[in-house]
Image 1 (tube, rainbow, N blue to C red):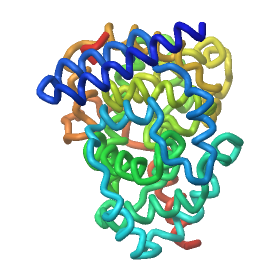
Image 2: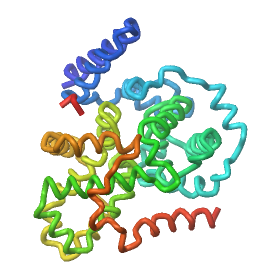
Image 3: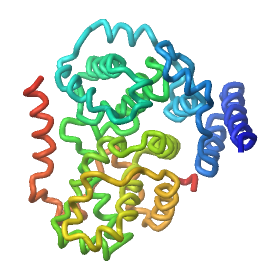
Length: 340
């Protein structure tokens, strides 16, 4: 087994080295990298990588970290720019950031060893300074924390910034429009793949905005963290729009329990622990079933406004779920296959 893992690690390193030496072949290099992630996954961290992660001066980039940077197109790190942002001190969103930092993977001992609250504070306030129109939206803390768990601080900041501003910018507007569109798409796809479960949920006060937290947080709300990293390998390779599909897969994995529960929607407050292999296998099966027009909307929605008016039935938020989510933010403020 060790030999197999070492062999896989060498294959990834060879792909990275070849890409560095042959920059004109970016597209085929990325194709091979994504294909390998899909078929093989990433190998677990080595003991050396794990040890470096929990040292105060941990500055080496793990294999996963290098691959994440490649997939996000982060090829140049600018420490001076980051330092200048930090020197501005607390942002105007500091009070909200401070509250959320304490909630970030607070039950995960490995995370607490590897990522300090000071690192989270620096990254989130620096982002708020650099992107004043976006500032800070609840859920960013766990997304930033995931990057800090895998990458050195400056690298993590640039990857975090790239993801939010380039990969899914509509998720982090003031009205989280991309997340609302994701909820509508989740609703449509769930009805398509499992009409029986969908009909039962509809009879039990179901509303797709119940899934705002897992969509907005890009899945970071459900442990364990090591399984989350495997899902993020998939998202970074093929797009974070796939978080919607993986959320549906988590719902389907609860199907038997949901269909006999008097209040099934209450179970969505906390999903069962992640099993990345099972979720990914089911998600790929769902993707293969989807009509092209729905899949195209799914791909576009984190980055571009999409017309989802045909899906608007039953989505008028009669329970005020969006208001409840906004109120939570206000309270904080007051407290100061490779074709994917």
